[in-house]
Length: 322
Image (cartoon, rainbow, N blue to C red):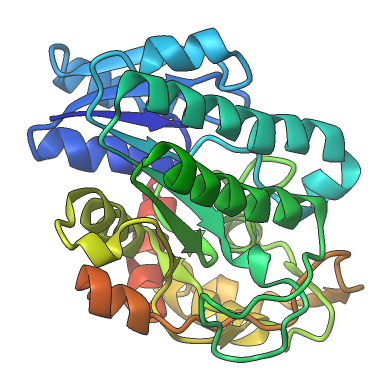
């Protein structure tokens, strides 16, 4: 089988490429390297010169999308501009990439006769909904331009499924973390950012009082979900949206405690680093906790890594690679 991974040079995308190649899939990666890194792909390009192809292109260009889907059986669509703060600062570019680019991919996949498109949705779609845990059928109003774009992806996928009889599955990612997540970007996610700060003996800044909570999800659980969504033969499982998480809530204060605990095994001085509190961030959801019953029932999802177990693995990777 031949699989296209858009955004394959990014954090999640490169992990998907690696897993697919290791399991004898032929893989095409489409990336423009705005946020992805060639360093994530070089070992794969060297190890799999026959079965791995890199296309440097942009999902905002329909011709690049059409080129990338040639002969492809499945699409794992990870390409997007992430980050709530980035979308608040520049909603136009976020919209162009996340909505315009997504529509291009749907059209290209439709016209190429792709068997199934699995796309990265987001827990930000739950918006101002206060219900916990989050169930797929109950959402609120989006709180950021980024959240709007991710919700529109779900709407477009549903329309294409109904109108053009495409197979589409959306995965609402909940705060994914793990190896290759960049700690150096302007919009770095909280875990790699805090790890980098603590390793440098600098104080991490928590937005608010630290009691906001997240369902932090280790990368290997996300890879499992993508593979299940791609290979499922259950007709009920298709044209659905699924929470992709572990189903466990952790506050930011607890997170810092775990990071100090695990990093102190490598450097005891890290335990002494103080935490600084700043203002709450615009567009942030206070609490996030996923119900994963639907994914368990329809896709037989069984996440292998709790937040703590995944964090231990991630810390080892960061200690060796930062």
